[in-house]
Length: 330
Image (cartoon, rainbow, N blue to C red; front, side):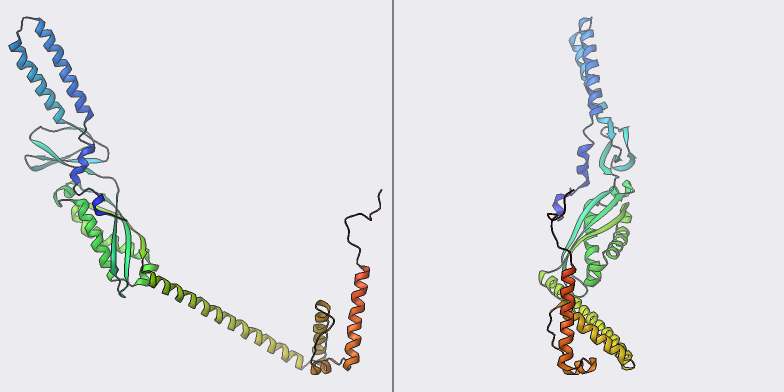
């Protein structure tokens, strides 16, 4: 979750990475070393101490001026230089010089792509549902001069602009559209935030909606609704299947009406399959027995005995199963 206090509240805090001027410190040390050597050489000569003291002070002052005037900006930084309180120039990256006590560096602006997390808590959608939305903003400073002069703190300003835009979009969007169309919401947020930050020299690259949180009770209700919809669809599919089966049976019945021999053969086959796979006793309605012309009880008995005899013959002809113990050895 994004905490507003975790970000720097003022862009001047970026100075800490660039004011540590190691090159200026090196020049400062070199000048002091040269001055000390010269003072030592002149002290052994005819010059007296009262003459050498101002010279040493001058060397130290020159070293301080050089250290203050030499600046180095990183490849991704731009230095905003004011001269006597007015905007003078943008400096960097690399080595550059300023006039001490006249020029002032007020901002070191990072020109890389930056990210800012923002959120909207307990915001009502168009259908009055409270949601928590978390998003990430990708942006870049295109014009450091505008970012430094047109807004007091562009980092905080872009964060507040993003939050207000997110709340406006949520209030105009239905919950279903928000859950299904995150890409549309992200694109809309990008357009709104970019319009607000363009006068500050900032370009919004993209906005990504990370998560949309809804109340637990509503989440359970939506889950039950989705389950009910799936059950309804399953019942509809089952009903369609039953209808197709009934239509198929109707077509089969119309075929058998005009062909009693086919009906007789089908009934005999069904009875035979039932006796063969399950048991030797099958309960058959008397009307079915008459339609199959089995000859009453004697016909049923003969059919059963015939099936049993065929089953016994099949078991006798079946080769004995074993692990090879009765196999003759070579």
